[in-house]
Image (cartoon, rainbow, N blue to C red; front, top):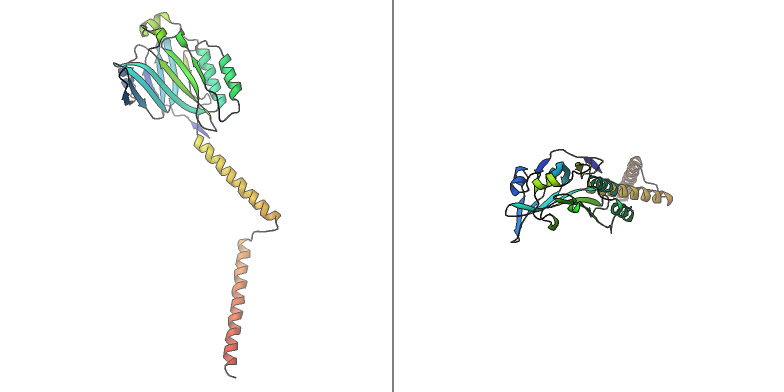
Length: 261
């Protein structure tokens, strides 16, 4: 089952900097998880439309269910956004657009699609990355959703502290790195729908229950058992009452006239 998406995006603008202050300006309330000494981890857990702005005019949209980020001294080092569940054909289209945007070959994607086609369990994940061609490094992970109806979800990664990009910043990115072929992309299902795995399960369960009831009814008819209608039940009760009344009358007559002898 699928329903339409709502549009209420929060904007994470990392086009000129990538600090915790940029995160706060988005209005997203990340909760602090732990301090690892070298970095601090945060989590955000709520369905929300997100727009991420990056150097070079990149704009990436995604409806998320959970997000994780790490920062050190107020500067972000990593951000992960986990998106919606979707069927394989939708995940395949999203990944294809990502490849086209960052001039990546489709061979890994095509191999993944063939390998997992028609599978609901035991699926193989796929990771695609812009690598060092763009700053910051971004990637998507076609990740199993553990849902038999819509087995895929998109995990979006941003890394600022990657070895290949040490010493780089947003200003250099605007000057030195190329503009993506498709600067604005969405990581949501291209159908525009939000797929509801729980509703799909309930629909399947109800259909199976109805089918079992029909099969049971067919077996009963085949065995010569005909279910009584409400009218038949009424006549059975009436006949039973009349029979009991007759027995009571006979008992009364026998006792009354028998006692006179």
